[in-house]
Length: 527
Ligand SMILES: [Zn+2]
Image (cartoon, rainbow, N blue to C red):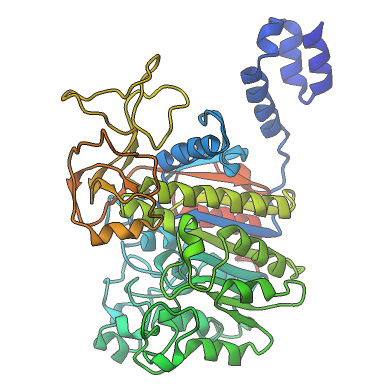
């Protein structure tokens, strides 16, 4: 019989086979693709052995990548490949271990990226808006920083002698990447011109300075520690590293004066002086020229502010690498270190797409994150590399109505057994995707930069979209409550895990648990 042969081929677990052998199931059931797919996924989990120690850890953060974003990105990914969409998976959704993560900050029901990333990197929750400090901090008050700093997984990895790297499509001084290396009473202190005079007077330093001089700051904080600095940093935010002086503009500058710094310091020059063998790059050509086999340190600042949305990347002045390319290059450099590496990769602009009310930009950036995770998974060994993929928080983004199977996810709701858009109580069509709040409906045609909506009037509430192509890149979904920027949501996010220690990712957990999963895998505290 067919099903017996199938079990003999499988025979992965005695228990399941025994049950099946004792109670024969109908062949049409055991050969059904839904049945076999679900069974093989379960068997993969049963096969997970007791490996808990990892050589390398890679943490991927989809900023603002809540569960509704995962579901709709997965459907869009499938539909872009001529499938119905619902049946597919983002790359990391096929990882064997998953947990739900509670995201609130100590003082906030709905969190921000600074408090959440500090929780993930340092193992404790803290207040909204602060970086690398505990809840005893007073946001914006420099004098409360001293004594409240916490150490991060990246710093512990650095002290342990692992290679370390950070990547973000946002400014590399933005909250999520900053929480891996900086201590700041305010996430907005990205360079000295962003800081109040009192903060500078009391000796607080800006986030860009803390990145470039990471080595000195870490060694000063822990006597006897000798580290070699963050090996790879790729992202945007060049303006925070350059003096406010046209003479320092790079060829990739989009503003008349690219730099913001009012202290005259050129931190890119400081970095080059510190790491004379390293590669500082600002465009695709420079990035492509980095030889990963011989490079130990690489620093790439590919945009004045945030990097482009993935869908808008070709519009960058001098060209910039994709998240997947940056991830690949970083791993190629970091894996030269025999002791192992710690890498944090943030897709920062999923969040920005949602804030601007553009599902198109948010979802296409989420798909690119999935591509980057797949690249990392394919390049590393699942027996020695723990990969964690999560979000810091969600957005007020919903998948609504009763669209039929395979209905375009960016389209209007068309119900089961129908070919025409469903109507609301007033006879108007409506989209599957929408926002509870934000700037509201916009029809910007082929525009691939969601931020163009900030130049438009807020247009919240129900609108007549019957003549609008809602699947075009420039369509911004309707929003109920008018706000200058769509907001985060307070619901749980998902955490997906593969590799040694991934077994610990299960149940409903506090966001601070992520640090402890990393610590357990790399044994960070025992140097
Ligand atoms: Zn946000």
